[in-house]
Length: 102
Image 1: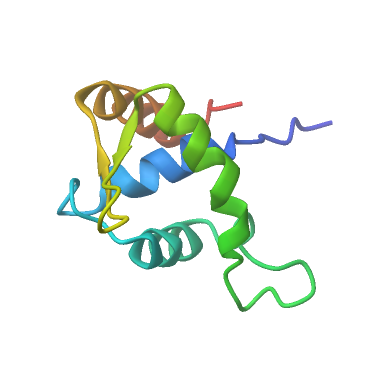
Image 2 (image 1 turned 180 degrees about the vertical axis):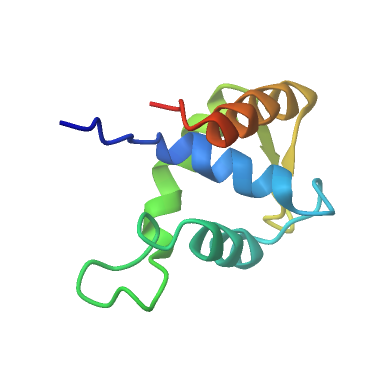
């Protein structure tokens, strides 16, 4: 019996944000696109798996901001990753490569 690995949506969002070339001026829409392209099975609608579900990012983004992993510009809504967030994203990246993130 094989163990099915599950991933925290917050960690997947952080990884997706970290994967983008410009890490400090990312629009919400761009982040939704990156998350969906990287992990379509997690960030899609249940009935319409070909479309991203942006609602899945709402609560996790607030959690990430509360943990000071990301910052959100109040005027533009753009999202940036903090140094603490980059550290966590590197850990997540390593775990994803090893297939050990649970």
